[in-house]
Every structure is written in C-alpha cells, then in structure tokens.
Image (tube, rainbow, N blue to C red):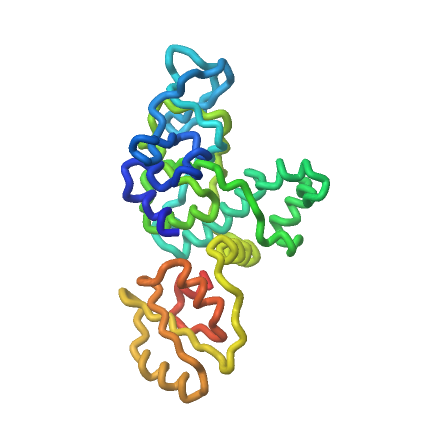
Amino acid sequence: MEHYKGCDVLKDPCFIHDQISCGSNDFCNWMEDKEICEMIQENDSIDPLNFIQIRDDQLFKFRAPNQGECKRVIKNKAVLVEITPDANAMFYHFNQWHSEFFNWYLDNIGDNREEENQNQNQEVILGKEDREKRRRGILKNQQVVDHNRHVHLILKGNPRTTFLDSFMLESDFCWRRLSNLPPDTCFEEVLEAPGFIGSSAIDWEKRVVNNWVQLLNIPPNIPIDKPRLGIISRRRKRFILNEEEIIKLGQDMGYEVHVLPLESMTLFEQIQMFQRMTVLVGIHGSGLRFE
C-alpha cells in the first residue's frame, strides 16, 4: 500500500509502477535507460477509431486521428468521478460515499475472470440478475470479488487527498485529477459514475471491509485466551477525558486492553486491529462507523 501513497506526491503517477506493472498502464512506458516508469508523451501510431475525450467535465466522442487531437490513446477503462462536498470534508461521509461508489464499480467495471472463464473449469461469470443480487448483498459468497484493477479513476474538481488512498481498493493505477490530464489524451472507453449521496447500506460497507482484508492480505483472527478491548483514542478532538480510568477498568474486568490512535495508524493496522477486537470503545465518529 505504501507505493500508492506516491499518487499524491509524485509529479508523474507512472512512477509508482515497477517494470512489470508499468506495462499494464496505457499512460506509462518503461524506460530501460533510466529503469523507471514514465508517462508516454505520444503514441507512435493511432488507428482511425472512435475515441472519447474529457473536456470541461463532459465526455466528447469523435473519430481519430484528426488534426492531432490524440497524442496518447488509453485502452484501459476510465471512470470519471466526482466526490461530494460532504465526502470531501469528513471521513465518516467519505466512507459512506466510497462504499456506494465501490459497489457501483463492481457492477459496472467487470471482473478479472472474464477472459479466464473461456476455460470450462473456471467459475461462470455472474449474469445481470445475479449482479443485482450481489449489489443488494443477497449473494453472500460474492462479498469478495476479483474485479478488474486496471482502471483509471479521473477526478473532477479539486478534492482533498486525505482519503484518496481508499481508491487503491478499486485500481492498481493512481487516481488522476481531470485538471492535470493532458488535453490531447484520448480514451477508448469512459464511464461516468453517477452522483452518490453517501447513503450506503451496512452490507455494502461490510463488503468493502471484506475486500480490504483480502487486498491487504490481513491474516485471519487467532484464537485468544481472553477478550480484547479496543479504545479508539483521538488525538485532535473528541477526547475521552477519563481514558486512563477506562483502561484500568477494562484490565480489572479481565480484558486485554489496546489503545488505538487511529490518526497515526495505517489503514492496514486499523483493519487488522479492528478484526482482532472483541469490544470497541470510542466517542461517536468515523472510527466506530468504519469498524
């Protein structure tokens, strides 16, 4: 997950890739002399096909090549995304918004089994009806989905980057701001995500967590001798004034007590510890909601 944090600080998002993953990103090209993955400046040749450009937050379809409109062609799927003001302001709202977006993403992007299923021994692809059941949480065995991770997320506006590491759940490619997208970039396929209001159902959020557990390879819970009490300890606001008393009380009651300063913990550490706790204590907020 550490490499994905480079999406916010690196001048060229292609820099996060090694030689193998660089080849799967149509924005990028592996430079043998530098041993680094860099953005393609221009494709050698472009076949006359129908392409899509994103201009002023709108999708424009046209046939290229035409007057040099396309200098680079992206064959990977792309999704145009707009994060709501509430989701942009607070993780509690972003978590709800992202849960809704992730479930839409699963239903509309497709999964990695599509080519593999040509082999008769592979699992059959979910049909439209089953995909709808999965979205509503009816197909419980499909809570963890091996989806297509070679997709570009193009962000409208100027969202803050605090929560954008969460897009690692959807794609191995860096998210990109529309404002930083070279205007001569053309796509073969772009989907525009609908506006989400952040009213995600609990089963959607559980599916998000289940996919995080798989993606981050978090080990299963280990049987414990005594119950564990996790105390969400905030460092900036909503402090628990008698935190030390709660720690001592939990220990006196026979709990193995863990203080969880979520602001200073990685997402991997947060999910790992939440998985291990028997009881969580905290002030109302996104920490408890995410759990």
